[in-house]
Length: 397
Image (cartoon, rainbow, N blue to C red; front, top):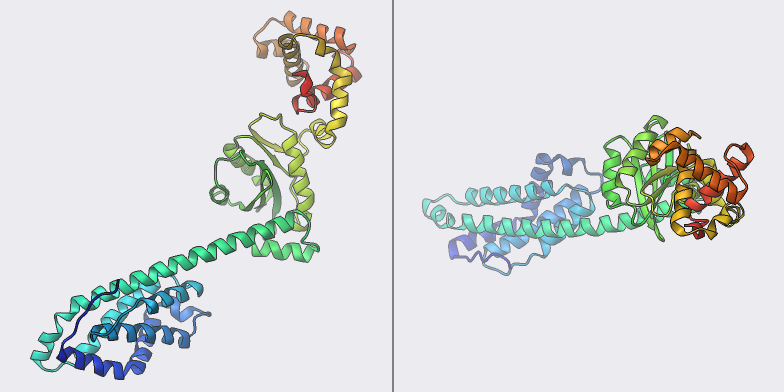
């Protein structure tokens, strides 16, 4: 609802004189705004003619209301949309309205020479500033709405570009670099691709991006089917561990990280690596896995059907055991491998006697025909165990 300024004969005469000179006044006010606000003077998108047109529309609306005529908020809303689309800061827009209020009051005073006329004008001060406040609020509201729409469009466009880069549709190296440039990820450094299960991060991509940016890492994120995909750019590979730490800190499930690479055209290969890295973690795991850090796990992830066959061939005899005993034997075998083949260290981790570990390993040897003391048999047990842990042999559990 616009401010009701009202009018009387003396004020109406003064306003009428300003309305006659609205074009000249618009030019003066445009110059004053440009001189007082660097954002307007430095803008390459909002030229002087467009600014003067917006100033004239707002002055005309305000003077009409001051003279007792009809008033609308169309002009300030249009001004807000224009300034937002041209990248003028909101603070500069609001300052322009304050400048306009002072400018208009000074021009009215210049037309008032007699004390009686000045006295009639004074009650209009509050009305003028009420109108300025209402107009600036309307302009600010339109400005914010325009920015929200633009940010929404930009966000969608950025996600499409990232998806294009990851799935290989970018085509040539030049096209891939152009996408990286638009995403502001084109600095000459190291790239990483991240794949996270959709429930693996409790933080929105934007917040995750802020956390990484704080340690000098740029990133862009997009939700794929069932996953969250990210492209990260590091100034150097020394930040790789810090990046993985940040990602691990947000994980509430499995998260895979590709090997570092130096050109965005290689993003599709890295995306596949990140997807496989996720599969290198057990289904219920929480944390991040870097592709290549566990070669055996990669083999199981690349060919889960073959891995399941290996698990069946090597550990199949354990299926005849009760679930509790089967689980205990597999846990002991896993801990023994994790302890570097040390029975004493495995016993300490399992909180049992060394002889208990030996007994369980011998029990596995009896059932499978493979002893951990034999290099070939031990390797087969390890590969089969990894297949079970990564879900290719869930029948074991």
